[in-house]
Image (cartoon, rainbow, N blue to C red; front, side, top):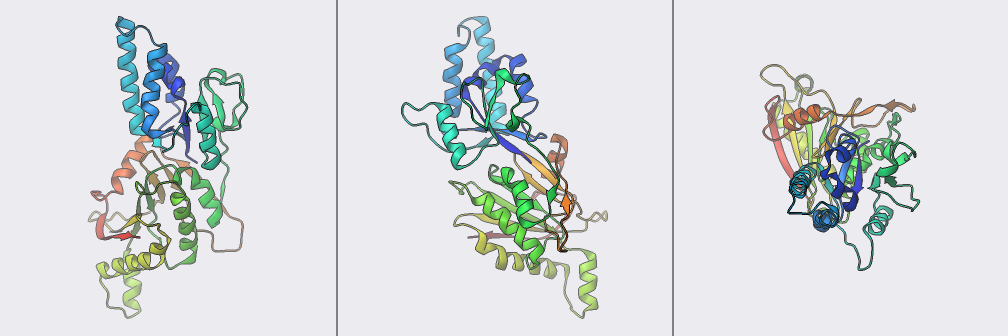
Length: 326
């Protein structure tokens, strides 16, 4: 539902002109279904600067100085909202060839270029938007089948491109197959990347008053903290074996706040955007083909939920937390 787009350095070099940049920037980043991707991350910014210097007004002219300032501001903005891909461009290889090769191994949502005579399903030619339909630029967003595979497939473009992922579901139960099976798929897709060292995962769940009351009715003398730690124990038992070496999953268990607020909504949040998963991160337990709607959070909604489900969040009361590491 949120897709990363590789940005051609030669195209971005023209975005010092705000009138050229705006039609694209207003559709890329937090709050949108498309986010920019810098590829190859180590060289991308220098490639943009090289292309800018080759095509911009003279550097010592007022227009050149204004253009230089504009491109520097743009690159700082893109650094804040972009995903990053490692990789390299071989000698005598063009950026586009390298990007297409990368796409073949680990797909982008699309590859945005200034123009190209090549035909490729992932290519989006900026100079021809409006006269040619580029399917990659407007990906379909049908209802999502509530199976482990259906949910994971819909979330996969975000899972495989973001480096910080926060799974939020107050009802998550690692011992319940309806939650465990989709989470196994989510984690597999998030870790299906060339490097996982920068991958930071969080799981946010709740301990509810109704659970405590039921436990006590069943004759269990257990505290809220004890129940929260049982949930984290279950996460360690069932989810830790799913993590690759070097990947950690930090679990947070939240309780009702002093104001009476309990967790309710379900999300997948990342540093580049967030999704609301209306029914939950679990699969359908009945043998019926039910679907769900997954929606992109606005920039303001994402900012609020990112803060809410952070170690310093204050809307809910933190009961227990634990780091699970492979």
